[in-house]
Length: 274
Image 1 (cartoon, rainbow, N blue to C red):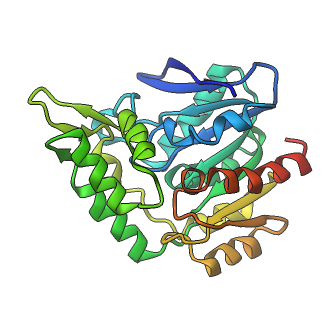
Image 2 (image 1 turned 45 degrees about the vertical axis):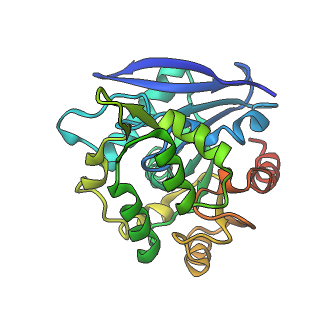
C-alpha cells in the first residue's frame, strides 16, 4: 500500500501542511478532517483509496502542522477559500472531496458555491442539523487541552472512544499533540476554531439543496452527531444523494471502521466514474 509523503505550501499568508498519497495523473481525491483533528485522521483509509486515485489530505488552518489564522479568522468562508487555493496550488481544476464533520460542512459550502471545483462529494457524519448531546460531549472532551504526559492524553482519548485500540490512538495523537517547554503535552489545534462566530448550521440546508455533484452521505451507525432521521432529511433535500450507514462506527467513521468506510465509498466512486 502507498505511504504518505509530507508536504507544505503557502496559501496567502498561511503555511499549510498536507499528506500526499498516490500517483499524479490518477483521479484526484481531497480529504478534509474534522475539528481538532489532522490530515492523519485518514491514515487508515487513504492508502486503499490511493490504489487507483491521487489522494491528498490537508491540515486545515489552525489544525495539525498548518498555521493558525491571525485574528482568529475561522469563518466557513475562510476554510472554503483555503480549499480552493489548495486545489489551485496542486494544479487540480476539480476533485472528489471526502470530508468529515467540520470538513464536511466546508465541503457542502464549497460544492454549493463553486460546483466546478467538486467532481464528487462524500460528506461523512455531518449535516446542517447536529445532535446537541453529541456536540456537547465532544466540546466537553476538548476543553481539556493539556496533559502531564502523552500517555495521559491517550488514556483520556481512549475513554472517550473505546472503539479504537490504544495503539491506534497513540498513532493519531502523535500528530495531534505537541510537547511544551515544561514537558507537558497539549493539542495543536487553535481553540479559537471553536469560538468562531460562523457556527450557525441550519442555514446550510439551503446550500445542500444547491449541490450539483454526485453526493454520498456516510453515517456511523452509532453516531452521536448525525441522527438517522437527519440523514434521511439530507437525502430528501438533495435528490439523487445516496446515504450509507457503516456499522460499528461512531462519528469518526473512517477510523472506527476503515473497512466498512471503504466498502461504502468505493461503489459510489465507481458508479460515478470518480
